[in-house]
Image 1 (tube, rainbow, N blue to C red):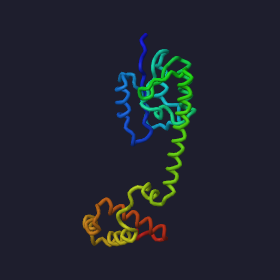
Image 2 (image 1 turned 30 degrees about the horizontal axis):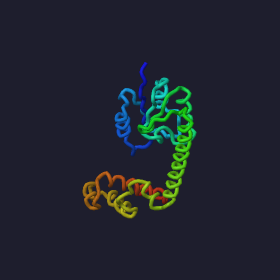
Image 3 (image 1 turned 45 degrees about the vertical axis):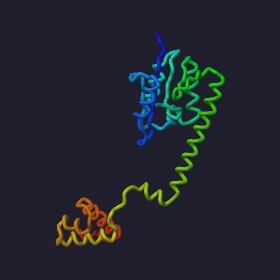
Image 4 (image 1 turned 180 degrees about the horizontal axis):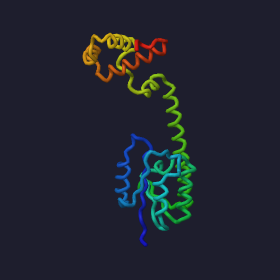
Length: 202
């Protein structure tokens, strides 16, 4: 049986493009039906169907191909566990086209160092994220889109709506917003009035 290239790609966040990784694997010579994917899983979780299937189809003499090492795992332990499995089964590892024999002492040293660096970088990213989240401006952006009307405008809009003098379309035009926003403002104003001990007029 001739040696095969078996590819694996993973996307852990929405912002990442799976097709970019797929394109890299195709460019490295991996056949389309030999590419396995995982999507939406953390790299720290090694029980991934795509990874397990890709490793399962590899046979002695094959090469396991990843577009980059961080697609394989996010910590040193996970990376080295896969390397050990590949080495025990006589399978080479290709990291973006650079092929390493996991049984070679220099390759083991290289990957141990590389995995440690990757793990440290993951820690730095986590630290930077925590530091950023500590800033009020960042937390505000993370809350999503804020209402276009202020609480005072919500209350005024509710009062006019309950009086029945203005149709919703006119209220939307008056407050320079959409009809849907008018109904949301009414709901907010009623909730605020209820919280303050008033039912908002009904």
